Length: 178
Picture (tube, rainbow, N blue to C red):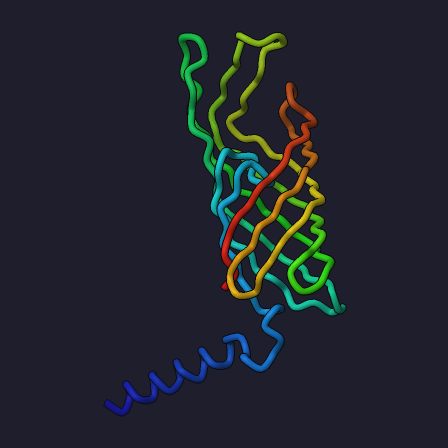
């Protein structure tokens, strides 16, 4: 019984040491989870976790985001293009105050699919089993520190795909801060 209480006390003290302090400014100690369409994940839809880092300068926030995305397969002619999974890693800098921020993102996305050549297009489109992409974005983010986060941004991407080296896209994300 004594061991149980010692373990419980140790666990309580450990949790308190590593938890976020309630006395620090709330806006710097947040996590977010969001559903994103297109964007840094390059997938049709993705679920992302984001951690805001404590800023050193006023009106600046920095964050790290990762997630998992998926694009379903499709029939192309008589062949089937299988679905693909995507894993984005994004560093973001946010400049603004209160609820409105300009957002700059720098990311890397790994795509895991299947080798496939779509010969119905000219020139043929190549889909690779593994494809990496480097992405930059500049956009707008709304954050209400009581729960809501919305972001919209255009982006540029460079891939190792020989038929689609450079692309322009956009991302829309809606989530919750906790």
